[in-house]
Image 1: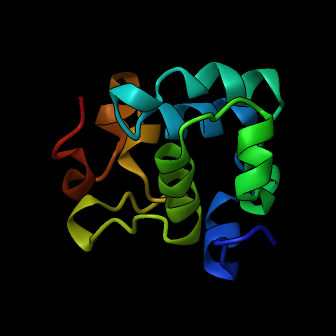
Image 2 (image 1 turned 30 degrees about the horizontal axis):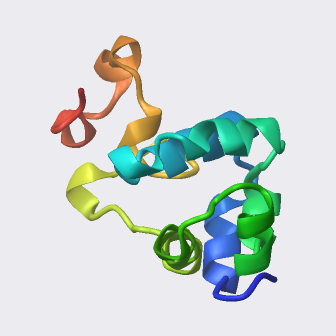
Length: 115
């Protein structure tokens, strides 16, 4: 596992597609949006993401050291949604995965805060 990555982080990202990883990284903030293309161009899926090191991130184009640190911190400690934002049927209870077209299918407790 990469430097800074944890077994918990690996389990959270395991099974994510490269598109989901790209969206997750870009969702870290405006400064991270360019890394969406980096993730897609380098075919970084969840298993690959959990294994990345600082050197790996630098080699694929994440030039700023602080950005690499933040990405590695996200890998090591993924955010955990609280009970009020969980969707009962999702393997990963992240609200960002839901699109407004699926909003009606969500349980009432998971509809709050959706775009």
